[in-house]
Image (cartoon, rainbow, N blue to C red; front, side, top):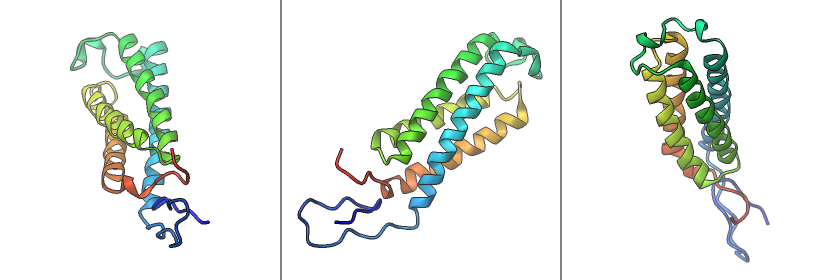
Length: 149
């Protein structure tokens, strides 16, 4: 009995499971990007917590005048959640795809608000967020677990 990422084969079915589409690799790439993005956000959060002089502006130069400790904890928690969602996407879980889209949307908003502190870095992370959202929304159903949940 062979299973594929494209579809689960019902127990006792005589017909072979449909072949995996080529879009599976795009969703797997999105899962890896989500893991990477989560690691980047954890790093950005740690830098905001311990080295606020690293950023280009003081807290008064940001869109929301919050201290860098608040920004640090926000980035840290969002990053850890992104890592968990990325692992779930690689396992083919529906909850992870939904959480991944939500986390990357919130991450894009967070990076847009934080843009004055680190313009180039935040721009790169916003682009990563958009790629992840596209892959998970357009082709997320192509990846499913190989066993019933």
